[in-house]
Image (cartoon, rainbow, N blue to C red; front, side):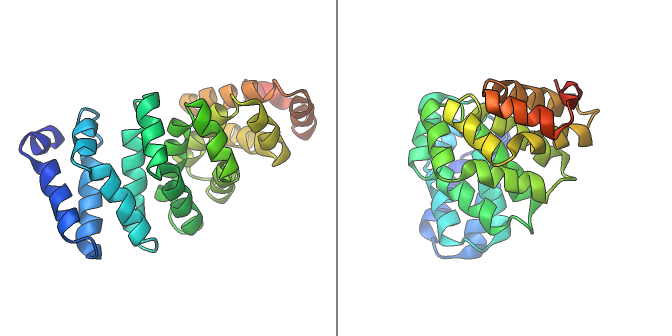
Length: 235
Protein backbone atom coordinates (compact mmCIF):
# COMPACT_ATOMS: atom_id res chain seq x y z
CA UNK A 1 0.00 0.00 0.00
CA UNK A 2 1.69 3.17 -1.23
CA UNK A 3 -0.02 5.42 1.29
CA UNK A 4 0.93 3.20 4.22
CA UNK A 5 4.56 2.95 3.08
CA UNK A 6 4.79 6.73 2.81
CA UNK A 7 3.18 7.29 6.21
CA UNK A 8 5.61 4.82 7.77
CA UNK A 9 8.65 6.76 6.56
CA UNK A 10 9.35 4.58 3.55
CA UNK A 11 10.14 7.50 1.25
CA UNK A 12 12.86 8.83 3.54
CA UNK A 13 14.23 5.30 3.98
CA UNK A 14 14.60 4.84 0.24
CA UNK A 15 16.08 8.31 -0.27
CA UNK A 16 18.64 7.74 2.48
CA UNK A 17 19.71 4.44 0.90
CA UNK A 18 20.27 6.18 -2.42
CA UNK A 19 22.33 8.89 -0.73
CA UNK A 20 24.43 6.36 1.17
CA UNK A 21 25.20 4.08 -1.81
CA UNK A 22 25.28 6.32 -4.90
CA UNK A 23 27.51 3.97 -6.92
CA UNK A 24 25.68 0.72 -6.14
CA UNK A 25 23.67 -0.02 -9.27
CA UNK A 26 21.42 -2.63 -7.65
CA UNK A 27 20.46 -0.35 -4.75
CA UNK A 28 19.91 2.59 -7.07
CA UNK A 29 17.78 0.51 -9.42
CA UNK A 30 15.61 -0.95 -6.68
CA UNK A 31 15.20 2.43 -5.01
CA UNK A 32 14.20 4.04 -8.31
CA UNK A 33 11.62 1.28 -8.68
CA UNK A 34 10.28 1.96 -5.19
CA UNK A 35 10.05 5.72 -5.69
CA UNK A 36 8.44 5.27 -9.11
CA UNK A 37 5.75 3.05 -7.60
CA UNK A 38 5.21 5.36 -4.63
CA UNK A 39 4.68 8.25 -7.03
CA UNK A 40 1.62 6.48 -8.45
CA UNK A 41 -0.15 7.92 -5.42
CA UNK A 42 -0.20 11.64 -6.29
CA UNK A 43 -0.17 12.88 -2.66
CA UNK A 44 3.21 11.14 -2.23
CA UNK A 45 4.85 13.36 -4.82
CA UNK A 46 5.39 16.29 -2.47
CA UNK A 47 7.00 14.00 0.11
CA UNK A 48 9.21 12.47 -2.59
CA UNK A 49 10.46 15.90 -3.62
CA UNK A 50 10.96 17.00 -0.01
CA UNK A 51 13.09 13.91 0.65
CA UNK A 52 15.19 14.66 -2.42
CA UNK A 53 13.86 11.58 -4.16
CA UNK A 54 13.35 13.18 -7.54
CA UNK A 55 16.86 14.64 -7.66
CA UNK A 56 18.30 11.30 -6.55
CA UNK A 57 16.50 9.43 -9.31
CA UNK A 58 17.69 11.93 -11.93
CA UNK A 59 21.24 11.49 -10.65
CA UNK A 60 20.87 7.71 -10.85
CA UNK A 61 19.60 7.95 -14.43
CA UNK A 62 22.67 10.00 -15.30
CA UNK A 63 25.01 7.67 -13.40
CA UNK A 64 23.67 4.45 -14.98
CA UNK A 65 22.57 5.35 -18.54
CA UNK A 66 22.82 1.77 -19.86
CA UNK A 67 20.63 0.07 -17.23
CA UNK A 68 17.25 -0.33 -18.92
CA UNK A 69 15.24 -1.14 -15.80
CA UNK A 70 16.59 1.87 -13.92
CA UNK A 71 15.83 4.15 -16.86
CA UNK A 72 12.32 2.73 -17.08
CA UNK A 73 11.70 3.38 -13.40
CA UNK A 74 13.02 6.91 -13.82
CA UNK A 75 10.71 7.61 -16.75
CA UNK A 76 7.83 6.08 -14.79
CA UNK A 77 8.55 8.42 -11.89
CA UNK A 78 8.74 11.47 -14.14
CA UNK A 79 5.41 10.60 -15.74
CA UNK A 80 3.82 10.43 -12.29
CA UNK A 81 5.37 13.52 -10.66
CA UNK A 82 4.38 15.64 -13.66
CA UNK A 83 0.82 14.30 -13.77
CA UNK A 84 -0.80 17.18 -11.89
CA UNK A 85 0.80 19.59 -14.37
CA UNK A 86 1.51 22.26 -11.80
CA UNK A 87 3.47 24.82 -13.82
CA UNK A 88 5.88 25.83 -11.06
CA UNK A 89 6.67 22.19 -10.27
CA UNK A 90 7.04 21.30 -13.93
CA UNK A 91 9.50 24.11 -14.46
CA UNK A 92 11.49 23.13 -11.39
CA UNK A 93 11.73 19.50 -12.54
CA UNK A 94 12.75 20.59 -16.02
CA UNK A 95 15.42 22.87 -14.58
CA UNK A 96 16.74 19.93 -12.55
CA UNK A 97 17.34 17.96 -15.74
CA UNK A 98 14.08 16.06 -16.07
CA UNK A 99 13.61 16.68 -19.79
CA UNK A 100 17.26 15.95 -20.57
CA UNK A 101 17.18 12.60 -18.78
CA UNK A 102 13.91 11.59 -20.42
CA UNK A 103 15.25 12.27 -23.89
CA UNK A 104 18.54 10.51 -23.15
CA UNK A 105 16.68 7.39 -22.01
CA UNK A 106 14.28 7.45 -24.95
CA UNK A 107 17.12 7.72 -27.45
CA UNK A 108 19.22 5.03 -25.80
CA UNK A 109 16.45 2.43 -25.71
CA UNK A 110 14.31 3.39 -28.71
CA UNK A 111 14.34 -0.05 -30.30
CA UNK A 112 14.61 -2.23 -27.21
CA UNK A 113 12.30 -0.99 -24.45
CA UNK A 114 8.76 0.09 -25.24
CA UNK A 115 7.98 0.94 -21.62
CA UNK A 116 10.71 3.59 -21.48
CA UNK A 117 9.39 5.10 -24.71
CA UNK A 118 5.77 5.03 -23.56
CA UNK A 119 6.37 6.72 -20.23
CA UNK A 120 8.85 9.10 -21.81
CA UNK A 121 6.19 10.37 -24.22
CA UNK A 122 3.69 10.68 -21.37
CA UNK A 123 6.09 12.73 -19.25
CA UNK A 124 7.08 14.96 -22.17
CA UNK A 125 3.40 15.68 -22.78
CA UNK A 126 3.00 16.66 -19.15
CA UNK A 127 6.11 18.85 -19.26
CA UNK A 128 4.82 20.57 -22.39
CA UNK A 129 1.95 22.18 -20.48
CA UNK A 130 4.18 25.21 -19.81
CA UNK A 131 5.01 27.60 -22.64
CA UNK A 132 8.70 27.55 -21.73
CA UNK A 133 8.89 23.76 -21.81
CA UNK A 134 7.18 23.63 -25.20
CA UNK A 135 10.11 25.60 -26.57
CA UNK A 136 12.76 23.66 -24.66
CA UNK A 137 11.43 20.25 -25.70
CA UNK A 138 11.42 21.27 -29.36
CA UNK A 139 14.91 22.77 -29.15
CA UNK A 140 16.25 19.57 -27.61
CA UNK A 141 14.80 17.39 -30.37
CA UNK A 142 11.83 16.16 -28.36
CA UNK A 143 9.37 16.32 -31.24
CA UNK A 144 11.56 14.08 -33.38
CA UNK A 145 12.08 11.75 -30.40
CA UNK A 146 8.32 11.35 -29.93
CA UNK A 147 7.80 10.64 -33.62
CA UNK A 148 10.63 8.10 -33.53
CA UNK A 149 8.77 6.28 -30.76
CA UNK A 150 5.49 6.30 -32.67
CA UNK A 151 7.17 5.02 -35.83
CA UNK A 152 9.20 2.36 -34.02
CA UNK A 153 6.41 1.06 -31.76
CA UNK A 154 3.36 1.18 -34.02
CA UNK A 155 1.62 -1.68 -32.20
CA UNK A 156 1.96 -0.06 -28.76
CA UNK A 157 -1.47 1.37 -28.03
CA UNK A 158 -0.26 3.33 -25.00
CA UNK A 159 2.80 4.52 -26.86
CA UNK A 160 0.63 5.87 -29.67
CA UNK A 161 -1.77 7.44 -27.17
CA UNK A 162 0.94 9.23 -25.24
CA UNK A 163 2.67 10.25 -28.45
CA UNK A 164 -0.51 11.88 -29.74
CA UNK A 165 -1.01 13.54 -26.36
CA UNK A 166 2.51 14.95 -26.33
CA UNK A 167 2.37 16.18 -29.92
CA UNK A 168 -1.03 17.78 -29.38
CA UNK A 169 0.23 19.73 -26.39
CA UNK A 170 3.43 20.76 -28.15
CA UNK A 171 1.37 21.86 -31.17
CA UNK A 172 -0.20 24.62 -29.09
CA UNK A 173 3.00 26.50 -29.99
CA UNK A 174 3.10 28.07 -33.46
CA UNK A 175 6.73 27.21 -34.20
CA UNK A 176 6.18 23.64 -33.04
CA UNK A 177 3.23 23.29 -35.40
CA UNK A 178 5.48 24.15 -38.32
CA UNK A 179 8.15 21.71 -37.15
CA UNK A 180 5.70 18.84 -36.61
CA UNK A 181 4.40 19.42 -40.11
CA UNK A 182 7.91 19.54 -41.54
CA UNK A 183 8.87 16.16 -40.05
CA UNK A 184 5.66 14.46 -41.25
CA UNK A 185 4.08 14.39 -37.81
CA UNK A 186 0.47 14.64 -38.90
CA UNK A 187 0.63 11.47 -40.97
CA UNK A 188 2.01 9.65 -37.94
CA UNK A 189 -0.86 10.94 -35.81
CA UNK A 190 -3.44 9.95 -38.42
CA UNK A 191 -1.89 6.49 -38.73
CA UNK A 192 -2.16 6.06 -34.94
CA UNK A 193 -5.84 6.97 -35.02
CA UNK A 194 -6.49 4.55 -37.87
CA UNK A 195 -4.62 1.76 -36.10
CA UNK A 196 -6.69 2.03 -32.91
CA UNK A 197 -10.16 3.20 -34.00
CA UNK A 198 -11.88 1.91 -30.84
CA UNK A 199 -9.65 3.72 -28.36
CA UNK A 200 -11.66 6.83 -27.54
CA UNK A 201 -8.90 8.40 -25.46
CA UNK A 202 -6.39 8.01 -28.27
CA UNK A 203 -8.84 9.41 -30.82
CA UNK A 204 -9.50 12.37 -28.58
CA UNK A 205 -5.77 13.14 -28.27
CA UNK A 206 -5.23 12.62 -32.00
CA UNK A 207 -8.14 14.93 -32.81
CA UNK A 208 -6.77 17.61 -30.51
CA UNK A 209 -3.34 17.33 -32.11
CA UNK A 210 -4.70 17.53 -35.66
CA UNK A 211 -6.95 20.47 -34.79
CA UNK A 212 -3.96 22.37 -33.40
CA UNK A 213 -1.85 21.51 -36.44
CA UNK A 214 -4.64 22.61 -38.77
CA UNK A 215 -4.01 26.15 -37.57
CA UNK A 216 -0.93 25.99 -39.79
CA UNK A 217 -2.33 26.44 -43.30
CA UNK A 218 0.48 24.67 -45.13
CA UNK A 219 0.36 21.79 -42.68
CA UNK A 220 -3.38 21.38 -43.08
CA UNK A 221 -3.11 21.30 -46.88
CA UNK A 222 -0.38 18.69 -46.73
CA UNK A 223 -2.44 16.53 -44.37
CA UNK A 224 -5.44 16.57 -46.68
CA UNK A 225 -3.23 15.63 -49.61
CA UNK A 226 -1.18 12.95 -47.90
CA UNK A 227 -4.24 11.25 -46.40
CA UNK A 228 -6.48 11.55 -49.46
CA UNK A 229 -8.88 13.80 -47.64
CA UNK A 230 -9.74 11.26 -44.95
CA UNK A 231 -9.26 13.71 -42.10
CA UNK A 232 -12.79 12.89 -40.96
CA UNK A 233 -11.47 9.54 -39.76
CA UNK A 234 -9.66 11.43 -37.02
CA UNK A 235 -11.68 14.54 -36.17
